[in-house]
Image (cartoon, rainbow, N blue to C red; front, side, top):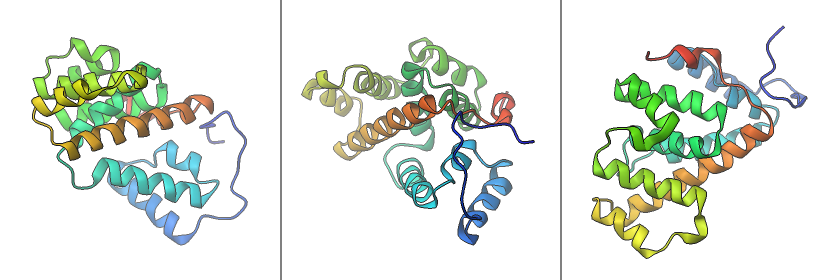
Length: 188
Protein backbone atom coordinates (compact mmCIF):
# COMPACT_ATOMS: atom_id res chain seq x y z
CA UNK A 1 0.00 0.00 0.00
CA UNK A 2 1.48 3.40 -0.94
CA UNK A 3 2.48 5.69 1.88
CA UNK A 4 0.13 8.63 2.49
CA UNK A 5 1.55 11.87 1.19
CA UNK A 6 -0.84 14.20 3.03
CA UNK A 7 -3.04 13.96 6.10
CA UNK A 8 -6.10 14.58 3.94
CA UNK A 9 -8.21 11.91 2.29
CA UNK A 10 -8.87 13.57 -1.03
CA UNK A 11 -8.90 11.24 -3.97
CA UNK A 12 -9.35 11.68 -7.69
CA UNK A 13 -12.82 10.82 -8.80
CA UNK A 14 -11.60 10.08 -12.35
CA UNK A 15 -8.43 8.64 -13.87
CA UNK A 16 -5.65 11.07 -14.78
CA UNK A 17 -5.97 12.68 -18.17
CA UNK A 18 -3.48 11.55 -20.78
CA UNK A 19 -1.84 15.01 -20.57
CA UNK A 20 -1.31 14.73 -16.82
CA UNK A 21 -0.12 11.13 -17.07
CA UNK A 22 2.39 12.22 -19.74
CA UNK A 23 3.60 15.01 -17.40
CA UNK A 24 4.01 12.53 -14.53
CA UNK A 25 5.84 10.13 -16.87
CA UNK A 26 8.19 12.96 -17.86
CA UNK A 27 8.86 13.76 -14.19
CA UNK A 28 9.64 10.09 -13.55
CA UNK A 29 12.00 10.03 -16.54
CA UNK A 30 13.83 13.28 -15.77
CA UNK A 31 13.76 13.32 -11.97
CA UNK A 32 13.48 9.65 -11.18
CA UNK A 33 10.29 10.36 -9.24
CA UNK A 34 6.97 12.16 -9.37
CA UNK A 35 7.15 14.85 -6.67
CA UNK A 36 4.57 14.24 -3.99
CA UNK A 37 3.37 17.83 -4.31
CA UNK A 38 2.17 17.00 -7.82
CA UNK A 39 0.46 13.85 -6.65
CA UNK A 40 -1.17 15.81 -3.83
CA UNK A 41 -2.62 18.34 -6.27
CA UNK A 42 -3.71 15.67 -8.75
CA UNK A 43 -7.10 15.18 -7.09
CA UNK A 44 -8.15 18.22 -9.17
CA UNK A 45 -6.38 18.60 -12.49
CA UNK A 46 -7.36 22.25 -12.78
CA UNK A 47 -5.62 22.99 -9.47
CA UNK A 48 -2.65 20.87 -10.54
CA UNK A 49 -2.31 22.77 -13.84
CA UNK A 50 -2.62 26.11 -12.05
CA UNK A 51 0.08 25.08 -9.59
CA UNK A 52 2.44 23.67 -12.24
CA UNK A 53 1.92 26.60 -14.61
CA UNK A 54 2.83 29.08 -11.88
CA UNK A 55 5.74 26.95 -10.63
CA UNK A 56 7.13 26.55 -14.15
CA UNK A 57 6.80 30.28 -14.84
CA UNK A 58 8.44 31.36 -11.59
CA UNK A 59 11.12 28.70 -11.35
CA UNK A 60 12.00 27.85 -14.96
CA UNK A 61 11.12 30.80 -17.22
CA UNK A 62 13.52 33.48 -18.43
CA UNK A 63 14.67 35.65 -15.56
CA UNK A 64 17.65 37.60 -14.31
CA UNK A 65 17.63 35.07 -11.48
CA UNK A 66 19.37 31.76 -11.99
CA UNK A 67 17.66 28.48 -11.18
CA UNK A 68 19.95 28.24 -8.16
CA UNK A 69 18.94 31.75 -7.02
CA UNK A 70 15.29 30.75 -7.15
CA UNK A 71 15.89 27.50 -5.28
CA UNK A 72 17.87 29.39 -2.64
CA UNK A 73 14.89 31.71 -2.12
CA UNK A 74 12.62 28.67 -1.79
CA UNK A 75 14.86 27.24 0.94
CA UNK A 76 15.33 30.51 2.85
CA UNK A 77 11.58 31.19 2.89
CA UNK A 78 10.81 27.57 3.80
CA UNK A 79 13.33 27.72 6.65
CA UNK A 80 11.49 30.68 8.17
CA UNK A 81 8.19 28.84 7.80
CA UNK A 82 9.69 25.49 8.90
CA UNK A 83 8.13 23.69 5.98
CA UNK A 84 9.47 20.14 6.08
CA UNK A 85 8.33 19.29 2.55
CA UNK A 86 9.91 22.32 0.87
CA UNK A 87 13.09 22.27 2.94
CA UNK A 88 13.63 18.66 1.95
CA UNK A 89 12.77 19.03 -1.75
CA UNK A 90 14.37 22.42 -2.39
CA UNK A 91 17.33 21.73 -0.11
CA UNK A 92 18.06 18.79 -2.42
CA UNK A 93 17.73 21.08 -5.45
CA UNK A 94 20.22 23.56 -3.96
CA UNK A 95 22.66 20.72 -3.33
CA UNK A 96 22.27 19.48 -6.90
CA UNK A 97 22.45 22.87 -8.62
CA UNK A 98 25.33 24.22 -6.55
CA UNK A 99 27.30 20.98 -6.38
CA UNK A 100 27.81 21.86 -2.71
CA UNK A 101 26.02 19.67 -0.15
CA UNK A 102 27.09 22.00 2.66
CA UNK A 103 25.39 25.00 1.01
CA UNK A 104 22.08 23.17 0.92
CA UNK A 105 22.38 22.29 4.59
CA UNK A 106 23.42 25.80 5.64
CA UNK A 107 20.49 27.34 3.82
CA UNK A 108 18.11 24.88 5.47
CA UNK A 109 19.50 25.66 8.92
CA UNK A 110 20.40 29.35 8.63
CA UNK A 111 21.29 31.04 5.35
CA UNK A 112 23.34 33.61 7.29
CA UNK A 113 25.87 30.86 8.10
CA UNK A 114 26.60 30.30 4.41
CA UNK A 115 29.47 31.98 2.57
CA UNK A 116 27.28 33.81 0.07
CA UNK A 117 28.08 36.41 -2.55
CA UNK A 118 26.79 39.87 -1.53
CA UNK A 119 24.18 39.62 -4.31
CA UNK A 120 22.82 36.32 -2.96
CA UNK A 121 22.86 37.61 0.61
CA UNK A 122 20.84 40.71 -0.37
CA UNK A 123 18.35 38.51 -2.25
CA UNK A 124 17.84 36.21 0.73
CA UNK A 125 17.73 39.07 3.24
CA UNK A 126 14.92 40.63 1.21
CA UNK A 127 13.06 37.31 0.81
CA UNK A 128 13.24 36.59 4.51
CA UNK A 129 12.09 40.08 5.45
CA UNK A 130 9.20 39.75 3.00
CA UNK A 131 8.32 36.47 4.73
CA UNK A 132 8.72 37.59 8.34
CA UNK A 133 7.68 41.24 8.21
CA UNK A 134 6.02 42.05 4.88
CA UNK A 135 4.45 45.29 6.11
CA UNK A 136 7.95 46.63 6.85
CA UNK A 137 9.32 46.24 3.31
CA UNK A 138 10.10 49.74 2.03
CA UNK A 139 12.05 51.51 -0.68
CA UNK A 140 15.42 51.09 1.09
CA UNK A 141 14.89 47.31 0.90
CA UNK A 142 14.31 47.48 -2.85
CA UNK A 143 17.25 49.87 -3.21
CA UNK A 144 19.52 47.41 -1.40
CA UNK A 145 18.65 44.88 -4.11
CA UNK A 146 19.38 47.41 -6.86
CA UNK A 147 22.69 48.21 -5.17
CA UNK A 148 23.50 44.48 -5.21
CA UNK A 149 22.97 44.42 -8.99
CA UNK A 150 19.32 43.43 -9.36
CA UNK A 151 17.03 45.13 -11.86
CA UNK A 152 13.49 46.13 -11.00
CA UNK A 153 12.32 43.10 -13.01
CA UNK A 154 14.58 40.91 -10.88
CA UNK A 155 13.05 42.43 -7.74
CA UNK A 156 9.61 41.46 -9.07
CA UNK A 157 10.86 37.90 -9.63
CA UNK A 158 12.46 37.68 -6.17
CA UNK A 159 9.19 38.89 -4.63
CA UNK A 160 7.07 36.49 -6.68
CA UNK A 161 9.22 33.46 -5.85
CA UNK A 162 9.24 34.34 -2.14
CA UNK A 163 5.47 34.85 -2.18
CA UNK A 164 4.89 31.56 -4.01
CA UNK A 165 6.84 29.61 -1.40
CA UNK A 166 5.05 31.34 1.43
CA UNK A 167 1.81 30.09 -0.10
CA UNK A 168 3.02 26.58 -0.90
CA UNK A 169 4.63 26.23 2.54
CA UNK A 170 1.30 26.93 4.15
CA UNK A 171 -0.53 24.37 2.02
CA UNK A 172 2.17 21.76 2.64
CA UNK A 173 2.17 22.43 6.38
CA UNK A 174 -1.63 22.50 6.66
CA UNK A 175 -1.95 19.16 4.87
CA UNK A 176 1.13 17.55 6.48
CA UNK A 177 2.52 16.92 3.00
CA UNK A 178 5.39 14.45 3.02
CA UNK A 179 8.39 14.73 0.69
CA UNK A 180 9.57 11.87 -1.47
CA UNK A 181 12.10 9.75 0.44
CA UNK A 182 14.52 10.09 -2.49
CA UNK A 183 15.11 13.79 -1.75
CA UNK A 184 16.90 12.96 1.50
CA UNK A 185 19.83 11.26 -0.23
CA UNK A 186 20.12 13.40 -3.36
CA UNK A 187 23.42 15.19 -4.07
CA UNK A 188 25.10 14.17 -0.85
